[in-house]
Image (cartoon, rainbow over all chains, first blue to last red; front, side):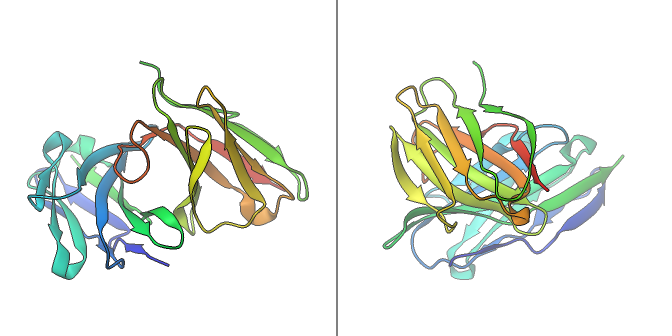
Length: 116
Length: 114
């Protein structure tokens, strides 16, 4: 089975610090990549997505992610975090597989706490 | 527009019972997918329905089943409940579907199995 790995389970940063959350996936075929965010008390929502083209994608609230195919990675970045970025971040991968059809895999999530 | 609605929000069952969860997607969305979220396993994909047909399926036993109605509302059923089925069950709707579409999530149904 395919997998999505998020290396950091808990990250604590001060406001204005830079953020990079790692995400690696194991599938070797064609994939679509996503980052979802869950703010405290809210439901999951899409932060950004990559399907094809420019490997550097920009999402909402100043977030961006870079797809590096050779490294099977899709890391999330933000140059300067704010207290309001405190949330749980999930990397996700969708893939088209021969035997089981389309699959959707989430990483286990990274909890980000931003200290004012 | 209204978001994804899941009912019930909380429920408690005992081992061996069965449970049915409901999901009403955003109007116009034909895809509904279901996920199980637990502290140990994270978010795991159960299945996706599109226009009343199960289009994709994750790696869960046959005790987990679902269906979708003509109005795109979906139900998920778990039979012969086990303690390990305790989890938050999320559904998500999408206009284009699982692979290429943005998923809009509901708040989830929290199931506790005693």
